[in-house]
Image (cartoon, rainbow over all chains, first blue to last red; front, side, top):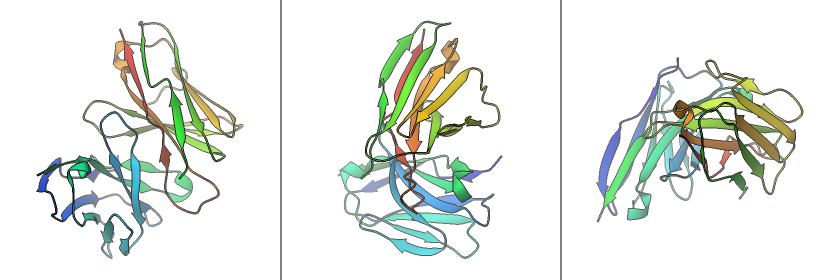
Length: 110
Length: 117
């Protein structure tokens, strides 16, 4: 059984940068890494995807080292509305594999 | 962006009855949809992959005769929980990928909260 683990929770303050890590102990060569945000009683929402090195979009950055055994989601300046659960997800070729991480509950305080 | 809807958003049923949950892609055609289950304060677990016009592919440990999946059109997949029991109470979420995009993004529905009494 694949083990894709994340810290259970993190606390931060408005305006700070938050880095959330995911361990990909059983990632396969062709798997992509994606990250999602989930609010209570809602479906997850896509944040970012990557394979290796660094990817940046308008809301986040994703860092993946050369060995791909981990990934780090970076949220540059969090606000209260970023309080949510964040999941990494390993996606295999053709979506044949879909393994969510254990999830990190981020709490942003004023 | 692409939108996926689910119906109903919340359902309460009695033990032994069956419940059907619908998942629709509203502005794109989805040849493949995915069904997940999420227990309180836990991660999402993939239950099955729904393929339009063919049989669903179930994950190990998921009973295909209990969780019936039908993907009869390019915009609709249904999950029927048969002979529901209290342990089936959970948050059921569907997702779809847009085959017109090369992204690995999935579009998730809002989820269906099932409570079996």
